[in-house]
Amino acid sequence: MSENYMRDRTVRESYDFWIRVTSPPKETPHPLGHPADNRLFYAFVKACVQWAGGKDVRRKLDTSILRLHLYDDLHSKLTEEGYDKITSDIIIRFETLLDYEDAVFP
Image (cartoon, rainbow, N blue to C red; front, side, top):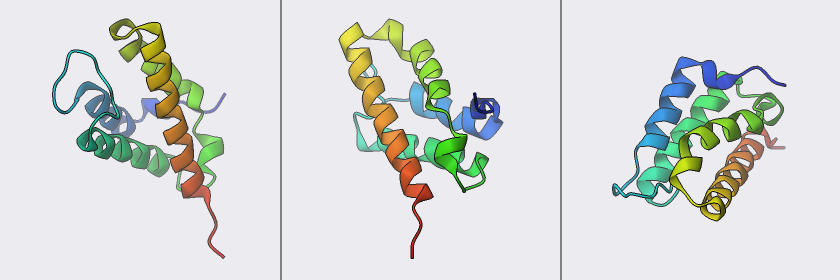
């Protein structure tokens, strides 16, 4: 398993700010449900990329670490189906953004 990037202070703070703030405030969290939530998510991803050194980020940033944190923060607040859907959306977007960071321009 990769080194735990969530132990980095900047990464953890940006994750906490994103996952705990939902716009507008609502009972059921949806961390990608509003443009402001997306901006916070992108800031979290940028912090992860910075931690990884900006190269080969997909290999360095193990999504199982993010999944564990999402489980701790969201599982009890959502139905099983809702949790699975949101987590899947988050992981797909996270991986897509990491692929973008790893893309090589000719």
